[in-house]
Length: 248
Length: 257
Image (cartoon, rainbow over all chains, first blue to last red; front, side, top):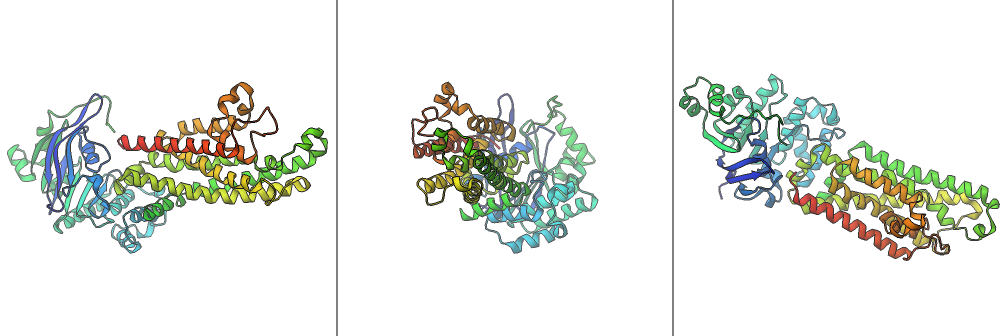
């Protein structure tokens, strides 16, 4: 078993009328930040939910450290995930949110205190999350993801709602975590941000793999001057402007 | 499992609405029990002789639980449905991917909480009702009283768990309460005593479980008598509860989150 690796093999997820993820295969390696890109409805969030065992694949496999997510006993020590920063009970304080999370995975109170300090929420720890700005919720989500000191981090749009200081903080944090040898998978719509954070890129469209490459290679091969330009050329075909909006 | 129960306990107690639901459960049960007791005491002399002879102080004692149970049921529903409405369920299942362990912890934590609230509520309600009833009251060591007291505690715990199972099955508060509140209101407020309907409604969970508390199904009155005894009634209610809990579990296992 290779540690801290995400492996997606022929992953497929079909809903009644749509194929959200279609025979998708890729590997995410440790020691670098991998950007996970694709237009709305491309299947990024579905892929992440399949990876975390929140949805069952129609076919194929999503493995974390060689295992399906559901067979991991204390997953916070292996995988930290931030899916939706708003997915916190608004009447619960930040520290109580982290307390129950910690308890499920046998993490002690000292770690909660240090992680709150690290994400800059120590002063707001006893306040209700309902009164938090989106930026503070993102920080709380990052704290939850880092709680078990995991080797793998999966973050869905972590810079949404952050002010410039927050964006820079995330960027440096992601870089530092990758430099420590961790696997960091980060989805985002902000191409400028991905261009400076990510080493590798996984780009999907309509549930299929479009590119598995590095930022430099992608820009060169597309004959573009920026990641944004290269990305837009590459995903042009795969963009659907559906009336229905985002699929949950 | 103790770690998971303790995590669920942190979730429950770290939300303010929990304490209000518990306070309301105790206050409504105790307050109404005292008033019902007072009212029986004041009107006892005016009751017809046969009703005076057949007067069951336990009916007056525990009748208020039909109202007092409502905030407890609402608590059970919100403990589950708030996970879905806030999407915390995704976080829960990400940190505890074993659905069975997660659900067992939620159910066991609910059972412990409900049993504690039930014990507190039932003892206080009993005392308040006797204070209200005065000379027409009964005492804890009187015939049949210990069984009714234990039965009332069991009833409240089971109704909490029944609501937990149903809420897990349905995931959202409005439809769950849309089933539970009419069930609990109509059941206790009369439908259970309408002769034609009674043949069916007497097997509903609350109707079956309330026989042991002497609230429904007085054996000495053919209009209200039931074809089953108090412990069979609790058994029927337990069967409803287990069915609801299993349905919730199967639904949670099968669906994507």
